[in-house]
Image (cartoon, rainbow, N blue to C red; front, side, top):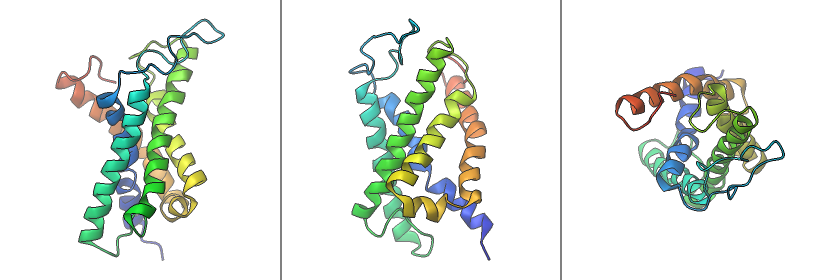
Length: 186
């Protein structure tokens, strides 16, 4: 019999590196604009000035490092909870995959927003919230299938992160706005 509360909790805990990748990109970003200021065939920027190579790589680094820290904490506290892998080395594959997927999904969202003529920082609701989740899950499926199947291959794990992300994302952005860390509350 599946332990649904445990599956929900695991899916959230194990997705923290994907959530951490985007703030990591903000912290490390700003150097080496990915689209080099170029426009797409529609005359609008491909991604915009907010997407840089230092942010892309810094986001992957941030998610991976946080995942390693989580691995060590989980391994220390409870051997029965599950983990990213049997060792730190084995954990790198799902950690890098979900972090890279998260950042790539953010790029997909930005590309789509530019096509819809939504400016950088403009309110795009689900385009700011779901592409990074879906791409992180896709990268896990492609590059770390056993981890994906263990925690997100069932409907409970995948739906948990898909449904939890929009209100979580919105709440964090409102807090950041009220703390004067963001110009807009979305």
